Amino acid sequence: MAATAIPLMLLLILAAAAAADLSVYHNVHPPSSSPLESILALARDDDARLLFLSSKAASSGVTSAPVASGQTPPSYVVRAGLGNPAQPVLLALDTSADATWAHCSPCGTCPATGTLFVPANSTSYAPLPCSSTMCSLLQGQPCPSQDPYDSATAPLPSCAFTKPFADASFDASLASDWLHLGKDAIPNYAFGCVGSVTGPTSNLPRQGLLGLGRGPMALLSQVGNMYGGVFSYCLPSYKSYYFSGSLRLGAAGQPTRARYTPMLRNPHRSSLYYVNVTGLSVGRSPVKVPAGSFAFDPNTGAGTVIDSGTVITRWTAPVYAALREEFRRHVAAPSGYTSLGAFDTCFNTDEVAAGGAPAVTVHMDGGVDLALPMENTLIHSSATPLACLAMAEAPQNVNAVVNVVANLQQQNVRVVFDVANSRVGFARESCN
Image (tube, rainbow, N blue to C red):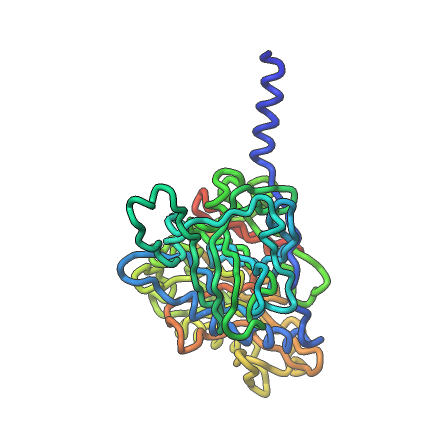
């Protein structure tokens, strides 16, 4: 008996440690053959995303699971499945949202380009009642008052909720069903089943969204110990549209060479992944920023967020002004600098010697020095001899104290979200 128990135990341990690897794809074809013009087009709605990230929950301390997102259209998707039998869906990755949701049939106003999930074709689909805890997290419609004599037999209505998304909003029902991620099948996964959309659908994920935040409705919270509280992704470059990166779920296979910085928690925005940036460098020169520019303050929302949905990294005004000044000092473009879209430090590459543009390094607590690859720092135009510093100042219409490290600067870097140990790791990796 003991001889068979030991292998069984080993199998259980190995199964618990196993990681699921899913390919991560670009969601939209680059609108231009030029990397610079493509990035500017993809980032055209970053302001809406930044407004969402910088908004703070009410002072009452009540935190709802955010399902809104300003990224339009979402930059990266994974192939997943919903229901039994599994129906394939492409879900947009979102590290700053908790709730997973999908467009469901029937829906006459959902995006015409996406395939709808059909609840009637799943034997395991189950609406969740208005009394469920997750319904309150989504700020769903309250249960109607019932006659106490009927309450024992009359079923409660399902949870219905309305949420904004970019410049639209949707009505959805909360339900549970199997979620299939790679070879893994997760039972009773709670998600929003979208039945109608108000407003333009061009800004919505075509089929749905996978919430990878830190709240109670997010993936890691719903699966318990299945992935050990760890996931990572490696995002492919925008210059490599036909290549894929990966989403890795679980501790197994995460890079041993990753350097980790503490993960900070903002109780007002508990879904977001905050880290403590301690400084920036351009080349070997430290950027001289005002004291306290990177300080984490949950009361104001100040600090730095790692986000998968924003395209261009944004720094608060004093930080970006200092970074821009130091970068321009190193480049020393003879004809000066011009602006293009969100970028204000563009220069003629014919006038600058090869290798004249310096690397930018982000310094974080724990001795983490994230040296950004040059393609993540400088974006070139293929049509003209023009290149731009691929970062910008946070727009004036958002909370001016939040820095956001965006997906352009994360490309070809394995980013590890180790929620179980409250840390975020970084390791260089060719994700294409």
